Length: 70
Image (cartoon, rainbow, N blue to C red):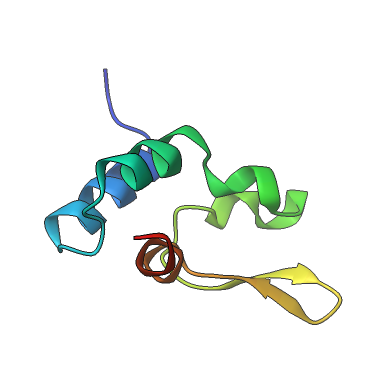
């Protein structure tokens, strides 16, 4: 089975040493950020960059969130 873009991103963050905690890795794998993005931005969910969510606000880049949670 081929990995999703989200799984590839998480694997990359682990290889880079950004994601280290098994609990955080499990949580991030279980909750992809598409659930928090407007429909028109969901195709960019695996991009490791902040994304606009409306009202002049952004959702943090996955690497940033990983560092905060770890």
